[in-house]
Amino acid sequence: MSKWGLTGNTEIDSLLNLATSALSDAADPNGATSGHELSVALTRAADAVDVNSIRFATQSAWFERRMLDYLGIAALESRLSQQIGDDSPESQAEVRALTETRHLLQREARAVVQRRFELFGEPATEAFMTEIAVNRALGRMAPAEMQRMKIAVTRMAKKLATRQARRQRQKLRGQVDVRRTMRANAGHDGVPFKLAFKYRRHRKPRIVAICDMSRSVASQAPFLLMFLYALHDAVDDLRTFAFSNKLQDVSALQSLDAAMDLILKLVGNGATDYGQVWLDLHDRHWDTIDRLTTVIVLGDGRSNGANPRLDLFATLIGLAKRVVWLCPEPQGRWGSGDSDMLRYRPFCTSMSHCATALDPEHALDETFKSYR
Image 1 (cartoon, rainbow, N blue to C red):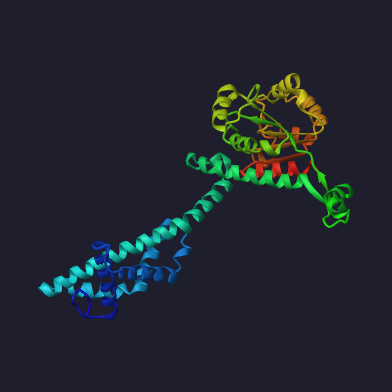
Image 2: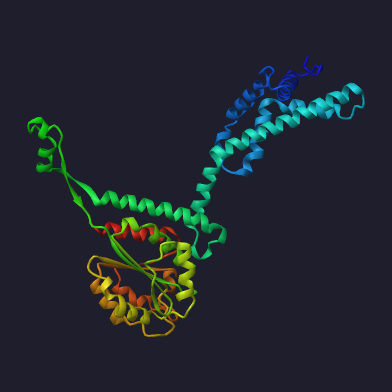
């Protein structure tokens, strides 16, 4: 017999007893700890149906139901449906008891699933959504995804910086640094208990980034700038320029949000003139480029029919260590209309389609690798 004074299916009696104990403990916190039995039963049910594998909030109701099934709620619901049409006082009392028990079990199971989701599901969901955003075409990024992308790009940039730091201090396999070894073991009469090895120190990259901020490219430029602003510690010298029909030095802008507003105000949404950009670079910033500098260009190479100044671009290539061009347009459109991409391509170290946030990451990693 249950604490409700009812008799019947063993599973029903067990659930009723668990519910009664929990309700009694809620009313009397200083009473017996039998309500703990419900918590134990719910934990056992959650483990049995592997609630820890939850990944999305939409799975909550399914896991909740599986937990209740494990506890035997089907028998309770069957009994409830049988008694609900009986108007006798005994049946109505049983209906109230069964209904209250079902509501309690549903509420507590839901709470368990929610806690497990917060612990195991939300991080997995966030990682999944971030992966989707990182692989989404940059021009189709929804405004709601921008904050997630900022976090993701910052993490990617930190990984790049860490990877570069490891490259910069690379041990020369098997080559002992005799002087450092002797100094380190001076207290052992020169006996080399501890060996010191030689390391190859790589130069930090020097980068000049030139970003097209015209209407056709402005949606992609922030992502390259995100990487660059997050990479200051990994780059020995970083200069950043933005343009549409005139070149603007934006290297001093450290905050990306503030930088983007100012950049768009200064140079954004104009008609692109790449020839004028190379001329501005030549006249005002030519000394920023030398044999240790990698020049990264983000743009579609569309000059609206203006002179592309291939002569200046060819001279630029002769000055720099590498020239990397990231184009937001697919390769099939290069050279169409007013595109000068195919005319610029012979002078570039590499030229590739910049479709997702992974493409600037790959380009920067390849740039870092070249500084050995």
